[in-house]
Length: 414
Image 1 (tube, rainbow, N blue to C red):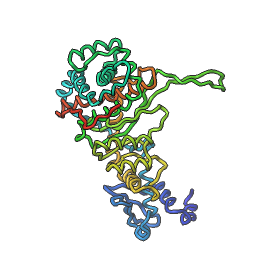
Image 2: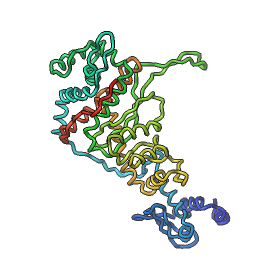
Image 3: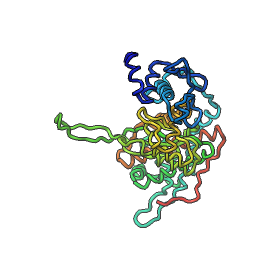
């Protein structure tokens, strides 16, 4: 568009289109806490700031209409150019952040981890009551079966090789009886074990109740040994793909403790899982912030996080706006994301700790699931999460001196 065409069509453009032309001409400069935008008809300049609830400009149009003027739209285009598709500033500083490590506490936790874990696990399993005997052959104590199942996943041994660890646990009086390896295998295939393990994960996180205030939500896949098959008529042959499970977690960003978990099939979307994870966490923790990536960007998720008293730090997708039709929390966080982007991203990047959580689980207990049947695979993944929580608690026992007491007032029967 040449200068003559611009002069003729300028008045026919709306304020947003005019702002885009101002942005393209580059008559914008950023100061300490405001932007300076050059006038199109004179040598005047206007100041645009976003310090209040709504953006403001010193021009007459903004003062009279109390709405966005062309100068505010121009600054918004200027800001959006700095935000790439990942929601990050493209102009980054090469500063490496390092954190100090309490090596004495770390060494103590690592060298004594298995012994402490076995004792904590015994206390944890005592929260599960033995089911009422009805008929048939008496079953082994549920607490012993849970203890054996968790320790089997923790050690990574096969069931037969793992039996020696159960004998050691019997000598330490951590269990009453040593079960047969086939009994442990059958126990892992029981549907009711899912709910028990999920409850134990929640209980295992409670010692850090007073420490964690900020949380992150994320998901990751775990491969299995099962395959799905179908016939491809286009190519005239049978094809198959590996079935995998997805673990959706809500974790504390300070200690990496997992406060709630949900397991779905690998193809399930992430966004619908956030509400259940946040509500479950809010039952035992006081939430201050909840962060997540763009997959969780939705007005329903923002509303759920606000209802539990927390602030959602979830970056907005490229095509969304802060229109009035959205909820108040949506508009508030959109304003925060757009006009105080650096500050917003400092809170958002706490979610990077959730990636650390999955790295810890997969590094220590494996990224694949060894069980053969579907129910046992879900139970095994729950156990991986439980083992991770116990290891985190052990670390904080040595570093922060917390007391790990796994007692609840009411125990749930099977």
